[in-house]
Length: 104
Image 1 (tube, rainbow, N blue to C red):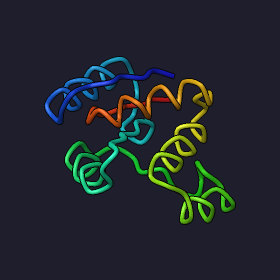
Image 2 (cartoon, one colour):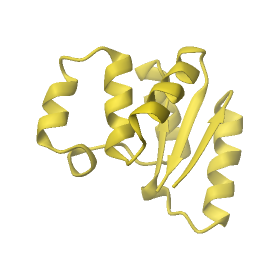
Image 3 (cartoon, rainbow, N blue to C red):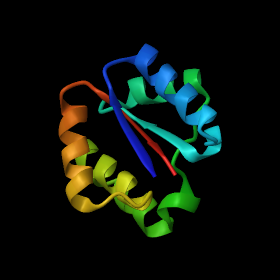
Image 4 (cartoon, helix red, strand yellow):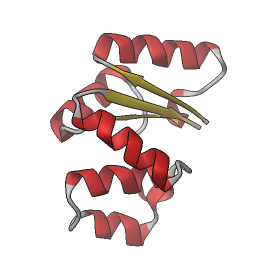
């Protein structure tokens, strides 16, 4: 698993291209931003994967409907294998407006 923290969409695109040259498929690259609209736009523009039922499981998917955005982001990162401690640290980066990219 590789994790990048970047400042903007341009840096996100560069990090994703680097991951692709290292053999990662875009289906295995996930992008996170604290603002859900920004996250959706960046995911669409970089053609990366959304975390779905396969990654989260039904219970987590339903539970996320009742969580704060920060709790939801940490849960989604954890569903990809990120430790709770690292997910909390990455969520703080997201609070500062940064973008997190996780490849598995």
